[in-house]
Image (cartoon, rainbow, N blue to C red; front, side, top):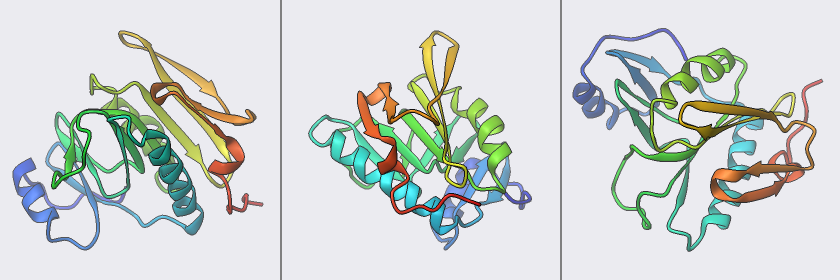
Length: 185
């Protein structure tokens, strides 16, 4: 999350974003450049994205990584991994309005933003059932699950043998989430 760039309307932002080489997030008229992730960050996103996609095959739900936009009331965000159950087959859509599961793989520069601000924004989506924060350097895993109405429960799964994503009924060996990733010293 860098400094905000020029103010725009959502429609202006979307028209502009189609021609950008870098990704930007948009909130309340402000545009924020997304900082590129590290190899460690990218590997965790790939590990999770591929395993979740395999798990969802034939279920009517789909997983996407990094380049799919999620629309909230006043903006556009790019989650690292997102699952939507709104449409069985992928088409030309660029925006998901009904994510069921969102996973953010933290970067040192976005840690506070992902943990605090983004979660507040994502919680405004009635479809969201689970929000996962993964720190690839420390191999820390926090899973927030919607218990009822507006009550979210946090389970720290850092020391668990499996990553449990109840929203999509998946138990994944924790080692496979961090496969090929070195822990920070």
